[in-house]
Image (tube, rainbow, N blue to C red; front, side, top):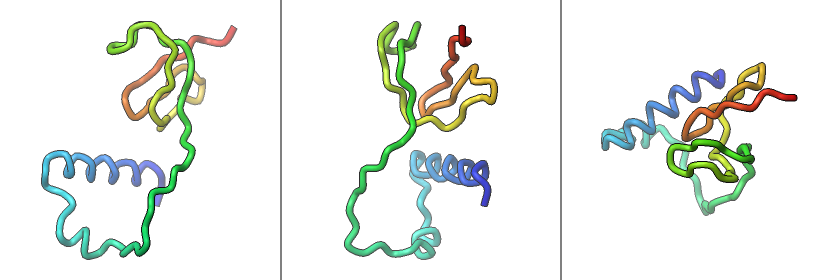
Length: 90
C-alpha cells in the first residue's frame, strides 16, 4: 500500500469521524484488538524557524505541526495545518 493511498484513506476516515459518520460498525469489527494498550510518545518531523505573516501568530518563532510533504526543490512544505513557503537558500 503506497503512502499516497494511506494518506487518502486517513483523510477520508478523519472526515467521517468529524462529521459523525465514522468509524462504521464494519470498520471496528475488522480492526485488530489491542490489549494492555498505552500511549507511546514518538518523535515526528516538524519545522522550526521564524515565520512571517502567519494568519494566527503573526511574525514569531514557531514549531509547526507534523510535516507531510516537502517539495523536491525545498521551496515549500505541507504540514498538518497549512503550507509553508521557504526562504530560498543564500
